[in-house]
View 1 (spheres, rainbow, N blue to C red):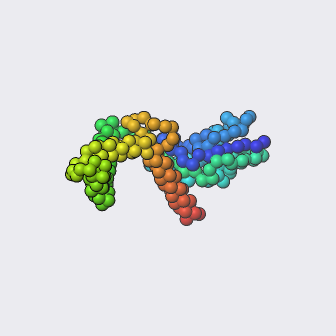
View 2 (cartoon, rainbow, N blue to C red):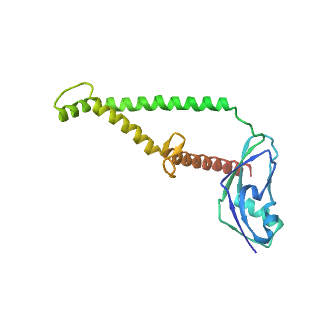
View 3 (cartoon, helix red, strand yellow):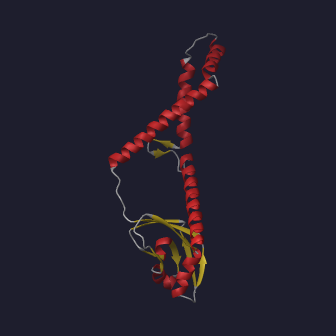
Length: 204
């Protein structure tokens, strides 16, 4: 009989000490489905927040101990990270709001300063004055008819680029920030897994 398993790359476990196969992987095993889901993979002994590493070899060995005659095909990850959290804490909504507000303020201030310094470095005000003189034949230090549409265009461009207006997306595509955060998350997970593998090798 052939069993297909698809381990997840990262699994967060709360409180639970005994980690079974269904906690860390999808399984396709027809008649043995329920039994394989309850196969014990590892038992967490320390009651503290910690990361653990499980390889596909550990999973195969755990299954083979109880079912030595089945064939196992892995269609998922080869290295799995378990993030164990002994107690799931509920964050204070006021504190969360203050954190979001602080981040928004920093981003707004930083973004505004970045745009202003870019415009200063590129002498954009002088360029707009020159454009006004070319198109109207008059010289003014405040060509509002160019500055206002330009400012609106920057805002619209940012909204379109980041694919967000208030809490709603313009399209279903992921935003550049979501893509970067996903890439950053993958890098963090790979770094932690590699560190856990090296730690496991050092203990052998």
